[in-house]
Image (cartoon, helix red, strand yellow):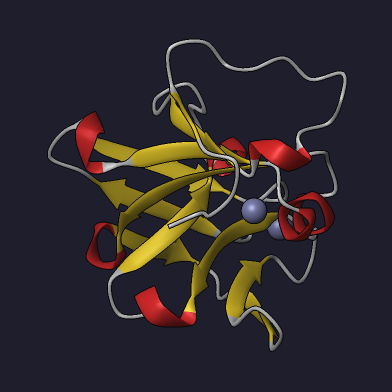
Length: 136
Ligand SMILES: [Zn+2]
Ligand SMILES: [Zn+2]
């Protein structure tokens, strides 16, 4: 399957090539870093092999958080956040922001991380794994 995505203004576009939806692990993360980075009360990313992801248009701006070692890529024109990755998985994985996909429902969530920091009003997603902390 091939999925496509972009930032809001479409100066950045990408494609994602997967053998099956199981090659992507979509998860919600309630940690404080995700709250700030996404500007909402949780992050929603899909973990895919680095080689499955390719920009087809534009070059992203990068921001590396030295404290966590996480690099985030986003559009320097409209600000849409496209993906992130930690130092340890730099050569192997990318965490794609699910809302940047042209079909955000293509890769439904398989689990939730940092449930201990879940917003008090936000219900659990049923029938997925729930971890109190670590995003692997
Ligand atoms: Zn943009
Ligand atoms: Zn997080």
